[in-house]
Length: 104
Length: 229
Image (cartoon, rainbow over all chains, first blue to last red):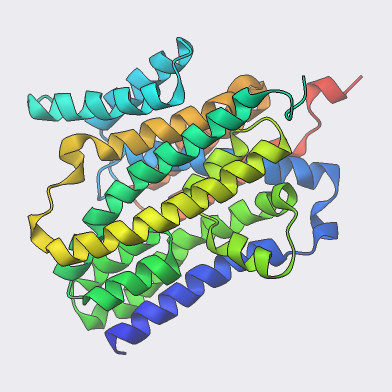
């Protein structure tokens, strides 16, 4: 397999997966229970994504480091009703600062 | 107050879309540099950002293919597993977006974590649609430009973690989930999803923990309390 083949095959699969979800017939997704589940899907997936990005190393093991501290600061900012951009900048600054001083 | 009468939600969603686009775009520099370091040429790096267009899968693909062409099947498998969640996002987005024909193909291509997160963070359908398209297009433009820049500049790019960009992404997704977590059932879904993913991460291949966490959405199967009685 050439590198180009690998690039194009994986790109085609990635697009196919996205399109498949959009092509599921609407009537299969219309029941109220199914609607509640599809509405919950992004919540489950994005929470899982944040958790793995914030609390795991590249090998998958659990860790509390600068990223966990950044999420903690973000949550405090959200509780204080800070605007979106402030939350994001505080998160980045927390991690950058902790890494700069070598604490995490 | 209707969505059309109140400029607040529209202004907020534009700010969210653009800042998510800029933060993600900045990460594309790192992707371009890593892709070239892994042995891809500039065209192959660009093909991934233009055609695959889903960051987690792209990073996994170049990380594995860096071991040599014999690793190509593993690279395809890992990037595909990480792409499954986009198909699951689409199940919900198809309701929100209500598009047909070629627009549906465009919507599919722009179905990624960022566009989904901004769309589901909004309270009404109009703002959700605006957030999806604006975030998707902003990320697409900046991700591709910065991939090109990173591929050209190569190893001279600093580590984005120095600037806390990885933590910025965590904070942004947390902030986008936040408005949905007013409801106890949604909190349960989020907590179970997060715990499942972290518990499975040490033992499962990349992509599987997050997709397995999708099962937490089945908690929404039961009728919400407010609809009973």
